[in-house]
View (cartoon, rainbow, N blue to C red):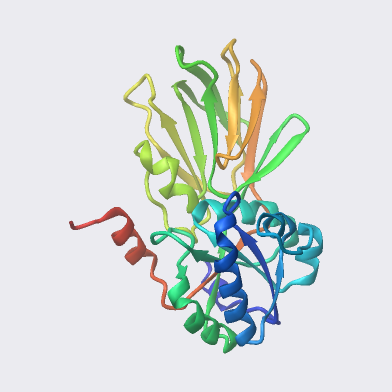
Length: 288
């Protein structure tokens, strides 16, 4: 982690692009409230077209939105923010998460806090976290992941065999339900639920965690992100590759999934007061 990563600020904070949680037409009143608060702080608001159609308003395509605004705003929860980061990744726009539920690992601004936060935001009292992204490739298909890439068995009745290489050298063979390749940001997602480690989100590292391995000697591995990792499916039934729980690819026997760090980070806007360890304490109820 480089200390100067948190010194980055936006050159302009005058135009915001809003993206709402999908399939939630009840958010029309919430959006109107958000728009009013932003405009009160001299920030012009633009709405993404899918969100606009959902609440019967006018909007812009994602391309138009990202070319027009200074930053994006995700309204919903961590899942909504995850989707916004991935869809807007090529535009390199920082994303602010407004959380409509309980405290999130990624979205930390509640509606009650929004007005005070925007006052600080307009006075450059905020921080931008640069979060590592994973770049993956299966044949000609390329993709990026913010949380994780999961290689999983196709059939619930059988286990999967996967050979793994680091920088072209064999290092492991996995036999079980699959493997999770996680970013530090995603370490508190699926990785955590199968016994993987929590890694500080501004670290640049891969976390490789086997899912229900046949051998008890298989353990999670944390490794520097400057390696390239390859996973080859050696099972006749093939496998499925799930990217951030949102995109699914089918992989056949002897096909390879290549994974490396992306040369571009995801940018997250947070309060200066945000403390990751307090979030962990509250979300995971440590000490209770």
